[in-house]
Length: 455
Image (cartoon, rainbow, N blue to C red; front, side):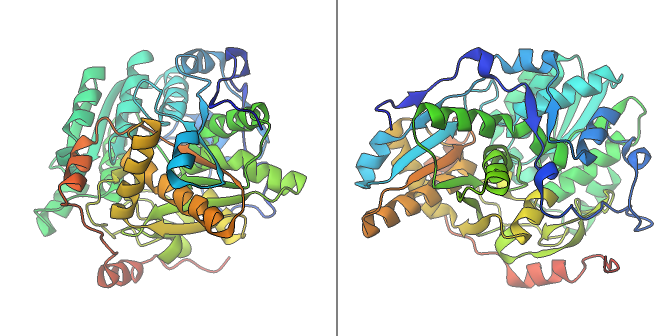
């Protein structure tokens, strides 16, 4: 182990390929099904929403997929991203554990999301797309796609979950500064939004509702495609630059993680860090523990069912097999808006079902406590989403202290919290509460899972 506190790779170490974990899975993913026929879909079924290059990546089983040079050229604005040894946090916790974190808050929009936004904007531009529609929860994805769309000359319309639209006005302002249009969801612009408002006029919205609105709008114009910031295979693929860099940086530190931790809402941040390590577990027989952390208010992996479900509330999207709480489930309005999604990535769900990773849930008050401990030690205000990974890392480090063991812990710091200061203001004022999921609403939502014949 070295005595350094930060590990910066040279620019020529920016990954040249994305790592596709589908090539190394012990068993293949369940097929994606057409929402109308229930039969496996083909590329033509997805063509109204995505460019063919991304559809190809979605179904690919090649282990490595080349990153186009125009994409790498943009990534050079902030990559390679630093990996830190959190020595001051270790001291604050008085733990023998060695804590590392991979920091993605150095991107222009302040999170990991541009890693895929840039790639998606590039492929859409190459195939003649003029306009992108999307959804966003806390706003990291919406601001990232707005940034990427501006670079590649695309119009961007963002449907932002209403509770986050109101909680995080500066995220909205950032999207508009990049030139995107930001709309609170549910809105009156779409059939999906109007239907929700008719039944629930005061709806806080959800990612499932916002996805429905964005997909509906994309389907109305031939020059428009839909972009998703998490969940899908090609999105997770693009994020693997994080874990590939982390592997090299752990070599620089002359150390290797015993446990890798990431927060998980739809799965992109978690997968970006964890998939390259999981790949080594599968192909090299290594034993790194991999832990996905979700909010207790939206416990998709720890409370949900592994079944076929729609990715959106209005049932416009294909059916995918994933851990789900039911497409109509609307979580409580916690500040970690990026983790308020009813489903989990099919890839992450499949890997969890195979026993290759662990999943746990954390409450928001404990997460904010851990986030402030981290900030007061390391100086970085973490995004509310990232505090879930920090809380788990703190728990692991304190367990090492109790047991007198020294383990290496690596977690993903997916973004900074500079646009989330109202959340910290509320926490410091004692206004934040822990929200357990609503069992009645959850059971109701899961009672409506689509009836899909056994495979």
